Length: 449
Image 1 (cartoon, rainbow, N blue to C red):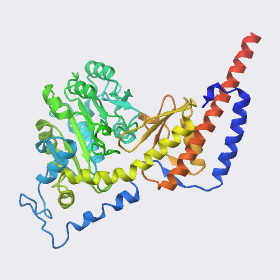
Image 2: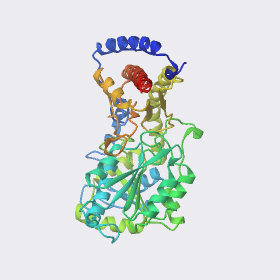
Image 3: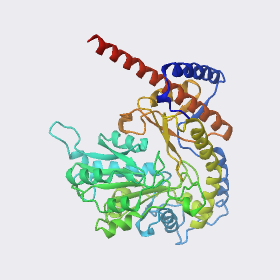
Image 4: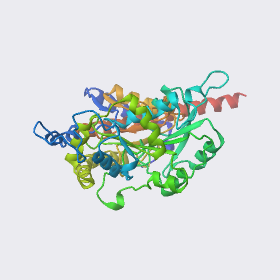
């Protein structure tokens, strides 16, 4: 296929006319489809409904250690729930605190507590102000990344510094240099496995370099959001990304307190009704528990027991995730097939091909992402806002678009992907024609001068 950049102005104009007609035809269909978030489909949610049958009024509501889950107590979670979440993260149960329904809450609480009360005896971040009264706290943000991470740090007025992502993880040369040279850098957001949105997984070297960081700030923490630890799209072992376990690597490096690891069952059982957890060092756990004793008398132990009884063990979780993969894999492959057939070789787009997670990351021509998303919305398909994968919603190249294939039905997904490709083509042609116009104007001005 000929690259669009190689087409003449006449060819581009002819192509534009045909694409505009196609676009108007699609608009006339009255589509109303949503691909804005990485949500499980209805079919995925339906397959876990029997989780509600494992506990009822006749069920034994007592944990293995004799805890009546209907009552107060057990601040840090049932022992068997700790083991379940530890298995998901690949850590020791002794390093785990089990929370409520979502890991986003846990991440928010971790930042909030650091702001108001500090980390392990260090000065609270809210008291670290510059002379002009602005926050002196900064976070590193690998980009493109997860918009809700950035929203948390922005909410607390924390300055965000972007770090480019690579297929092996964040640019570690830059991370190491920044962390070691600036005491105001207190953390970094990470999605180490099947990253949001690119679907990259950190290499062994990247994980080891994280564990061996030498931060200037004593209270620097790696916010390790292991959201997709068991979310493979393929059953074959060779197609399942693997990452080193960060807690043990930090211990080896003499940095046991440097990482907070987060996970939940939100995309395993139910979104918004799962079980969340943090895994970290003994010192961090003791600090966290001081806040928890004020914050709660204990999280939902009935839900914890329900999940443990339903999945039984880690093999049960893996078997359930294979059912998720069976529903998700054809959707990802369908989107990738259309992108390959329609855009490969055109020079107007690149995309990732993940082995797991919930997203495909698309890079358009520079300066086109917002226009593509707007055209899709005008024709009835809502995508994640352009720029959302960057701090403050500002993508400097205006090129990244996050594609979330999981929620629509196969029929809806086919319509949405066809429209997306159409919009990519149309906006790209318009951009190239603009460039032709600018080049012609500049040439005329040079001649006149």
